[in-house]
Amino acid sequence: MNRVVHPIEVESYRRLRARLDTSHFPPLTRAVVERVIHSAADLEYATDLVMDEGPLEKAHAALHAGAPVVVDVEMVGAGITRRETVCRLKDGVAGPGLTRSAHGIRLAYEQVGPGALWVIGNAPTALEELLTLDADPALVIGLPVGFVGAVESKAALRESGLPAVSNVSEKGGSAVASAALNALLYHPTSPEENP
Image (cartoon, rainbow, N blue to C red; front, side, top):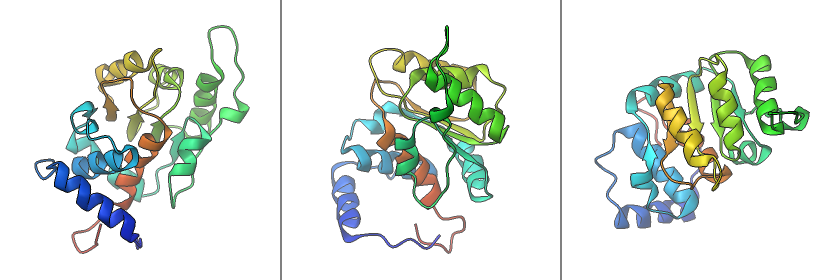
C-alpha cells in the first residue's frame, strides 16, 4: 500500500519512541502497540494490550487477501482508512436480552460468514454476542470501552482462544480499535515495502 505519511505523524512517532522503547516487540505487535498509543496519546497501552504475533501474522495475511472487516459502530468504520467495512448497527433491533449492538453483530455475521476481521471498540455486548457465534474469525480486535461489561467481555475474549487483540483495563474505544486494524492495514506485506 502506498501511503503518504504526514510530517506530524512522523514527529509524533519520533516522540513516542523517545519516551517508550518498543523495539523488543515483534513487528506486527509493535505496529499495533505504537498505532494504538499514537491514537490515544496513552503510553500505558504498552502494558495494557494483549496479543500474540502468530495470530497477527495470519490476520495480516487475511486482511491483505481481502477478508471482510466488520465493525460494531460506524465511528470505528470511519477510523479505518482505505478499506470498506461492514456495520449493521443501524439494522439492529433491541429485544428481551438482546441489545441493538448485539443484534447488529448477528446481522453482520449472517452477511459476511466466517473468516472476517471483527473490530469492536464501543459495545461490550457486541463483543459478548460475537463470542456466542461460530464466527471462525481471522481476528477479533476487542477493545470496547466502559465501566460496565468492558473488562469482562475482553477477559472472555482472551479466554475463548480466538485470535485477538484486547486489553486488560476499561480503556478502549473507537479510535484505538480502528488504530489497531490500521496498524495491520498499513504494515508492509513484503520486506521491500516501506511501512
